[in-house]
Image (cartoon, rainbow, N blue to C red; front, side):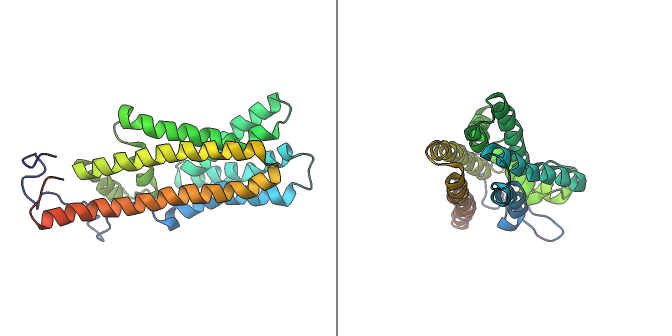
Length: 242
């Protein structure tokens, strides 16, 4: 940014927004905020699969039944908060599409195993496309859902971040990392689905997801904090070229 640009005329102009009631400041979502969606949309379906896979005929049937908790979670979230849970919705949409395709292919278990990977990859592509074709990067909207929730004051504070050029760059970089990371994770999962039986695949898949998503989440938290600290340090010494 140019030193004489509209945001950099004085070091005091770049003020991060906050909730006037309690001083809450927008930032990356906490593990506590994401945990319910991860449990309802991923961990519970996996537990259901292992509980019933020896009680039903075929992996495809077990995988189909294991997708039901995702539907219940999305419905519960909608009834309780009148909003769609993003993680549960992605899993549910992938489940429905995968089950439809599997039925047309005679109950192909491979299709059901990779259904989430398809939509993970598509979401990664959407993240990258959002940098060019959406008003704000995709991770801005995802972060707002998990960080600000439904609180109007916190939503307003989160939206105010977009008025800060350093924050715009931060969201662009984070969205790029998530876009590329999701595509790579989906590709690795499809490879595992092709070479492993269903049981070992479902044991390895959560580990792969934990490493990939945990790494991207950790990067998001670290880079957000680093970017802000960098701006504040530059302001402290009178530098405005951020």
